[in-house]
Image (cartoon, rainbow, N blue to C red; front, side, top):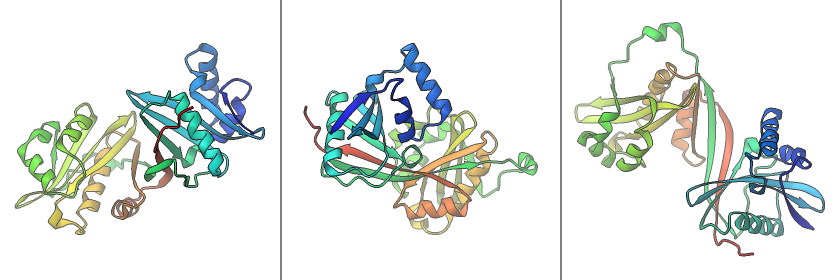
Length: 281
């Protein structure tokens, strides 16, 4: 028999065991339940023959609902069908539902094979400590690199670079993503014909940096420029952050090699799914 329960004080331990939640987060969740700041209807546990086998929590950003799913073991087709139906009902059959499974938050991270789900992405993550050496405080930027601020993102040169690079970003997306970024530092490698590689680092939360390689000029691919600018951006990030967090698709062998060459430590793995057709109750 498959049943679902809203989160409660009585089943809290079951949910936290499935989702690998630490005691600190568990205590915060319990306080949220008691104070009414956590909606227990958006945190559900799936039981199969009395055993808690999966749990999920749900939040939404506009019309998109994000579901953080954890499971104790691989789920069979019938169990996946019941789970998707419950998620759809909880989200009131919202048109856009993204189901996310993180290795660090689940006892099992096997890929879900089911005709009701479409795998959108399989990503790997790293969280790399940054330690600024004393000599790096005063060390000038290598003269191969040129720094820039956010105003450069509006320039025609930047627009031209995007059109002739291997990057996946549109100018509108970049402007939207980085306009409000804190501790913004942009770097480029320049040649006689203009920028050859461009990257950005910025603060995503206190003491934590993100790095984005915007792109490498198409005729300069596989020449080591991506690795070189990534390494320089790590050095810049050390000046305002203690950690660098990053991610890439598991099939992006180029970025995985760059991570490895520059000492990034892979720490997590994530699957993201979409429900092909929301299941009606």
